[in-house]
Image (tube, rainbow, N blue to C red; front, side, top):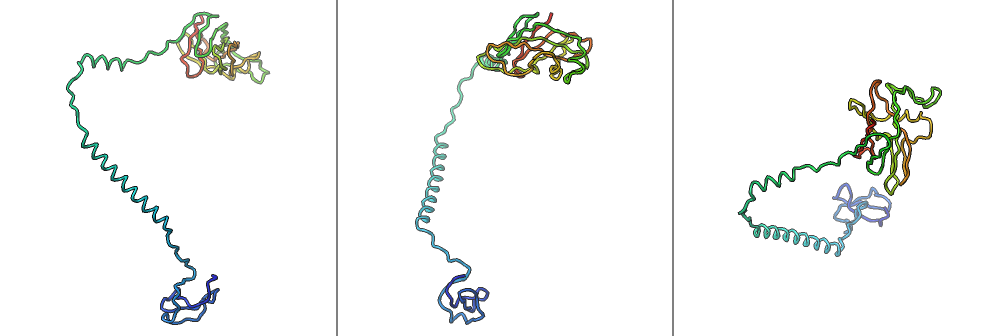
Length: 248
């Protein structure tokens, strides 16, 4: 503390005053009746009076809030007093209502899947055109045994040769993992992406295809021994409707 030396009320006993030497309390005390009229309390900062502008702002905000509240109540009362119920005097015939309900409940027909039969026939799905040029089946291994990417079939490998053309005006992502093989029992098979690494040549199972470009690629499937592949369902993406190419 840097307060001026003097007699001040004792912080522990207000009945007496104690002498403050400017640095600390001393042992000198006197009855409170002889104390100087100062109300200084060392260690307790004096309160500053609230600024007049702050007081005026608080009063103004309070008045504004009360006014808005009263206005809202008045508006609600007016709306309730003017609102009236208009009784229904007419009703549509039952036949008209049934027809309207049947029209609203009729589901929107989905776009039918394109189907092509045989090789070298294009079908389109989304931004891609697909042509199957060849199918190999009954393979037990993809790649040579010494190859790092050699893969042995759990059943038999089927390799479908597909030409994919981007028919849009922007690059489009193609993925062999979106294609589905169908056998003679109607079972569906996803591709074996790891086996495609063992294919000889420069096949790209996934990647962007630029507008107007045709990419010749191969899709590998692992299906049971004895199963006969009959069709492939080609897809622009995993969310597309798909198109079907029959092999026979």
